Image (tube, rainbow, N blue to C red; front, side, top):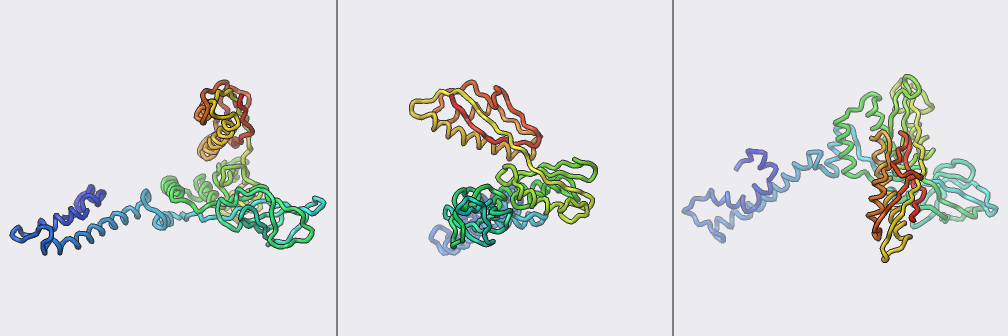
Length: 368
């Protein structure tokens, strides 16, 4: 039997399974010959049918590996490479470290000094100012983003009384997933970036480590000017360090001479968003099996998840709208909540629409 229609290609496991192949082989044997199970002919054909069935399984898998919607791992990498895209590798988180003497004065340490916190090790890689350093996690990925607190030196450091790990400067990222790479592949093939158009700036900016989203504003300060407003890979306001890194990659020294990624004649300014604090107040009725503190903790987490989704969509939206109906739904869906009423967002019983370059940050949740 030949593969002569698309249904057979798409359903190789149905048309070319072991039983079907063996039956077709037996059908070709003259009826005068014994081909019952256990006969010489049957026993000779059965192993060959099994091998052919396995071959068709591999063939189907290989067909899946050459199309973008079903390719995985290195095969998806090879497809993406054909359109100039490479999978983003895992990166090291860089956080701010502060170092004090016994009088609580900031002091300098040597570059390369290593410190432990929560089973992770961070090393000083660059001095920002007196007593303030960029601390790079020695383990790649997002695991290095979450540590905050006291740093313990691996080796003795003279005059050091206290060391603290604080803000994220450049978030660490895990190796890009197949889903993310596939989405970028489709974006690139459907919207061609070329020579400094908006899509080109979006693609090139998001390839820089630590950048999660960007809005491109052409001609923001006259002809030849471009503004890139970025979020970090956690979809939060970008740190000054990340802004500086992106600026140096795209357009160092605000020069229009094409010294960075930006084309000749373009002056690119990198900026970030403003954060708008959001306070939620709501009247809730809860069951006797829970407490208001437990409900508040759960609702706070759910609202933060909602805000994260809004920030992930920020790049492709004109503005972010925090909808009162969504907040009510989140509260009502929390375990132990029976009813909700009189919800307000920043003291308004209506939706809150942020400006184009603003993102929400949850300040507090008050349940009455």
